[in-house]
Image (tube, rainbow, N blue to C red; front, side):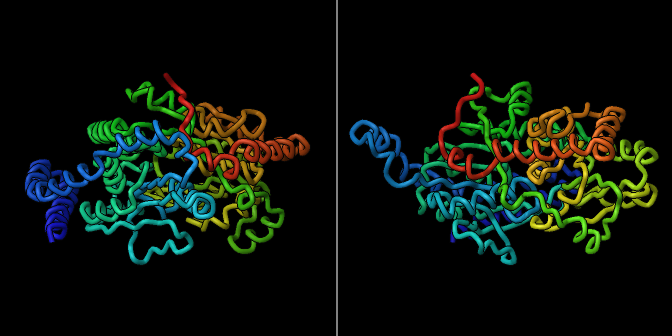
Amino acid sequence: RIADLSDEFMRSLVSSIKTDVAEGDLVGFATSFSASIPGIFLSMPFFSAVREMFSNRPLLEDLLDRFAPGHDSGPMRRVLWFTDTFTDLNGVSVTLNKVAGLASASNPGVRIVTALDRGENPARHDNIVTLPFIESFSLPGYERYTLRVPSVLKALDQIALYEPDEIFISTPGPVGLVGLLVAKLMGIKVTGFFHTDYSLQASKIIEDETVTDIVESFTRWFFSCCDEVRVPTDEYISILRTRGYDPSKLNHFHRGIDTSEFAPRDESRLLLSERMGIDFRRILIYTGRVSRDKNLDIALEAYRSILSEFPGTGFVIAGDGPGMEEMREKARRLPGLKLIGRIPNWELPDLYSLADLFVFPSETDTFGMSVLEAQACGLPAVVSSIGGPREIIRDGMTGFIARAGDVGDWTEKIRRVLEMVESREIEYQRMRENARLRVLSLYDWNHIFSGLFQPARQTWR
């Protein structure tokens, strides 16, 4: 009953905040937050009870280390991995769905914790913990990305029964905050995964310095509460250091891909030309969110520049997002620009195998799962010199790295690949083979999965 009452206070708070934020009413926001304080006080005795229940855990761990040195060879550690996104089409969801599948077969101690609607059925995995939620909302610029606010006390009761040994968190949203709360109450290690640079994306999408500062401050606070922060690329570890993140907590998080699923498919051109109407002499492709933060205008300007030199070349964009209406308007004026919207994950290898070049001008991605997918299918790529994707590419061997924001350099790098396609076929095929081989050697899930649950090598001191 107290949980239900506390949920009502929280539901009222979230509903009011949505209205106040939409109207820009900061006074109303403060009033709404003040009104929720009784709900927080109702929860406090239960927080104290959980903390007391687990207060002896460090002592027990110390006793085991002293008197049972082989205890680590026993049952696998229980890890709860919290995420606000699991069924969406984005890199975090793709990664965690793969983790769930691999863990189900080889590491039964791992559970993915999220909040799903009744219509979302993760039945293909048997290791999903679904938290009850009391309210949901979407963020400006991310209307297709729904955040759900869990019932804190009911979630705490559900999680305490599992008695986790460690907490992983992929998103600093409501579900991620519950994971952080659980870790602090139970006195266990919490590892945050920096998948997405939310503040940089906000600066590109909203273009409001105040909002960007708020997002940056909150994100930095969230990860400062973690005992360890895993980051997908060394490039982004350097970026976070300059932004004030504790360098002693930053470690490398190796991401991977299923190289049996993402592999070259020779029959793709005929299949997709019939089904999707993609029938160009040469094809550039982009897959992902269609949004300002992806810098697609750079790639479009470069494409416009090479059209006269390489007639019959098309630019295919697969994806959706808040910039889609603007992109449709551009497609009416730019010959060969074809928008095919969102397509299911299983069709992506066909699309990559069909194309001649993948272009990814984003400067805000910490990794770039789309780039890895394309490379696994043997597709050369041109990426920006700023951001995580540059680490996936070996410049001149599997694709090219173009100077961020420099249309001339993007044009030149795209031209170099198309010239190889036209007149240096052996060199181009070697680039395709190198792309595939590099992914097999560095990013195959079968090689890196077990390392996710081992202590990370410290990258910075």
